[in-house]
Image (cartoon, rainbow, N blue to C red):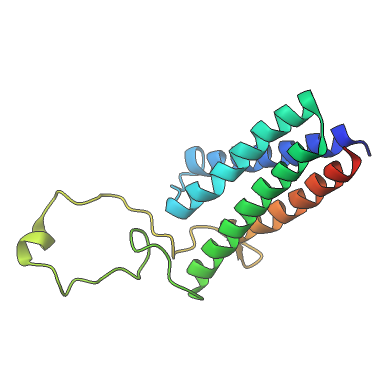
Length: 154
């Protein structure tokens, strides 16, 4: 396969994963958590890099695409670890927060706090025992391979 084909598959794969995430969100009703959003940003960057790589060519852009795909795989691994309890997640969206002990009664009854917070340490959907974060990690690692193959041909 050519440089162009590898870039199309890699950037197209990131675009497909972004569209899939949006479909789960808007068609499936599964609101994303903070870490889910973090996984989307490198995919968007990889799509932009892919457009530039198709237009300008070159190994550097392909390596940057690989780095973007690797970044989203890394966040997917981190999110998977939070979901499985391997490590603590952000206190703003996981059960690792400071707890209720330091709060006053008025704090507990306040309506000024965040509403509808989606927890990062709860699995909203899974297939074959893997969560969406895990599947994102696996798919992103495959995309890293396509970016590297493009870089070698560029």
